[in-house]
Length: 561
Image: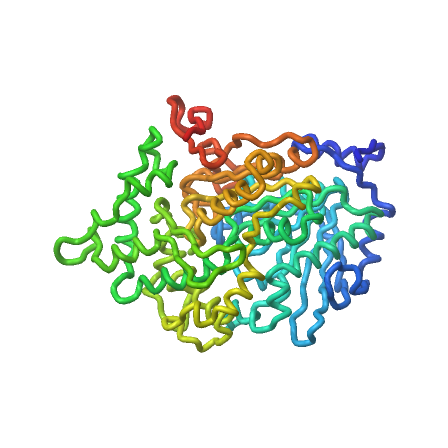
């Protein structure tokens, strides 16, 4: 599989591989990339280039892009999104896959071809309800801010909008009213774009990629697990961070948890801060160090009792009313579904404690972003009421009820049982049988952030445990890892959150070096990037516990029960 490189281009590729800790793979373009790029412009490909039923493929443009330098913006939706990473010169390929149903939207894609290819490719997952083209130029999930992005390391990178395009003034779930668009969002678009990307690589470099990787976070994390479950032959390595894996349960939990904030349950920012401080007081020092991070959130479930914050008299910023206490208890409790979902599941796990008062990073952190919002939930659902309500209530209307005017406050899953089962079979990435993925040599790494309120990290933990039960502990350990990051919210804020997972994954796939304890970095969102502190990233169910020494170094902690 490995080949010797003699050209200057491939010498540079090998040097980059050495610098980034990855092995160089064969990758010599049959013709200069500039010529190959020009040949792609305006190209049409037959529908048969994809393994799934599809319309024809067109490449709208293929243009060489000049190298750029890194920059940091003052604001952004996530810490990583503030960075515009340095990029090499590359060929940017934009195109679309036509639908079969003429009323369905196109599947848009972007493929980035580096001048010096390392023989690998990385497909980027999406986020939310997608509808925006993923350009695959950014950092991969959780990556250190000072690490070169995959394109700069020589990977071909690509992404898609999942087969629909958001429109101003329309809820992001509107596309689900079209069956083909829904199928594409569920899984088909990622497979189709993967197949198109492989064909483009063959035409550009004279060969298919020798190793294919998929990386995704949130919805993109679900997509990664979907690839392992539905298309096990397509990827060698998959990294799935904070995946919305138990999708149907999550949307129904978003509805339930939002409704818990009605009729007096809603909490103002000062009360959210009150709860967050009470959680830290009960649980922060349990790992041996009071540092603002709850290292053992599972143990914290036994230590923290929200009832102790209930008001004795008039409600204020220093206590919670009985209705507010009940709302917090609802968020932390499992949602029992009255319809059996895919793979026999009936419960969606509760959330918390820890990270309640994580400052909203551009409206994407803690309770104030995901649950409580700026005001109690309203109808029609508004994102300012909390993203969980906006996403969950909207999904109930468009996916399950198939009625944009549905009064979600009267919705009962059992009244829509057939549709709930249908959507669960499409969207829920909860199949524990990964035997085909394992048999082809695939490797899977999951990362759950334990202060996540966009979804429950315990859903991913439950999935991991179901794989172990189905396939056996030793077999699962041979190809799958689950890591948990304490105190980190959905988008990577609140505690040390950055880890070089791409190197860990490629080392496992290509060198047989299985990952053990890794290192989480807390880095400044600036140029130059500065290291603020580090913690060990432990495999579930271990948690980092302070052993003494420099509180800012990972070596001062051990992963223990």
